[in-house]
Image (cartoon, rainbow, N blue to C red):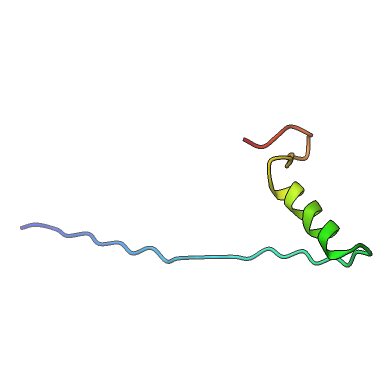
Length: 50
């Protein structure tokens, strides 16, 4: 007699969104956003992300 075990995993997703209004031209705002997400990004303690 053999036992067969099957398991299924649900795919779960979530979305985090933060919307703010700023008073700056779109090119300046976009460049600042890229700086935050790109190579100049930092963690809360000021250390760089890998």
